[in-house]
Amino acid sequence: MIRSQIKGSGSALPKRCVTNEELAAQVDTSDEWIVERTGIRQRYIAGEGETTATLATDAARKALDDAGMGAGDIDLIVLATATPDNTFPATATKVQHALGCHGGIAFDVAAVCSGFLYALATADSMLRSGMATRALVIGAETFSRILDWEDRTTCVLFGDGAGAVVLEASECGDSDPGILATRLHADGAQHDLLYVDGGPSTTQTVGHLRMKGREVFRHAVVNLAEVLNEVIEDAGLSSGNLDWVVPHQANKRILDATARKLGISEDKVVVTVDRHANTSAASVPLAFDVARKDGRIKPGDLVMFEAMGGGFTWGASLVRM
Ligand code: ACO
Image 1 (tube, rainbow, N blue to C red):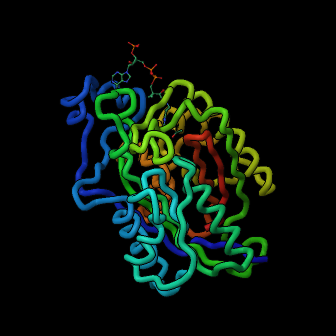
Image 2: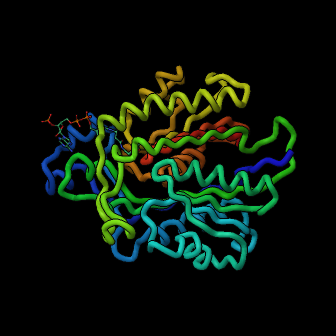
């Protein structure tokens, strides 16, 4: 059987780090409120010259180095973002050019905070079907540019960044590494709980992020627990088999509640929301890269990725390293 194996990872953050105290000087909030309700202590905010494409390119280069590959080895780039550099062309094609990849397939996926899961599943399907052999799967965002910096209920929650993995199609036996099972879901009926109030076809403006936080929270815990159980069952395993969960980093309370529902101990959950805040599609590959590079995630480990975001969209994917 053909499986997509993760051969390398990389991540990138903007230069400027903004603490809760700095935000409290601009909007009516406090470090205490933000830490207590979300677990967030700081976030990175893109400055001049830093865009979704530059962050994505930086993360992709590091992932290629980590995999011991060059741009010429890649024939597929799938980039998840809700904050592309331009309405078109796809940011993936900008990254392709910046990396020096010639030919192959490159496109963006829009599933907001679940974008990386959607991109991973798309690349995995294309690799297993033989359409491509080696893929860069990237999550990259500059959410700071769609935030209403006067709305304290949203502007404190998000940050900018990028993460990337290199996938390779390999002939595998049952116990070999690779993506073992994936489930994706969407429910458009909930789109007004979390959305951007602008766009090319409606207002001809970029718009700002709007969210009913409390309702998003409630749906997130229910949907994530359900999809995680589906994937665990598809793989014929139990939650006790998991070595690591790498969740979308929206809010420490969502991470804790989801872990409790699944009966997974908190020390198996990779948490970076304190340092990075919610970086939307970038958050899962960013957290994954942090935990691989600091030696927590090791070859042979069973790792669960999961995310939920605007749409709603949500999904989970189980990978053996
Ligand atoms: N600083 C100080 N006070 C604030 C702030 C702030 N930044 N934001 C809101 N408040 C106030 C509110 O005005 C409200 O005041 P009031 O009682 O006088 O009206 C009070 O705090 C409580 O507000 P709630 O919205 O009820 O607070 P809650 O405990 O629900 O926390 C939060 C809000 C953190 C947004 C939470 O609902 C949440 O995390 N929701 C999930 C949303 C999320 O993570 N979205 C990310 C995208 S989706 C995803 O990734 C899954």
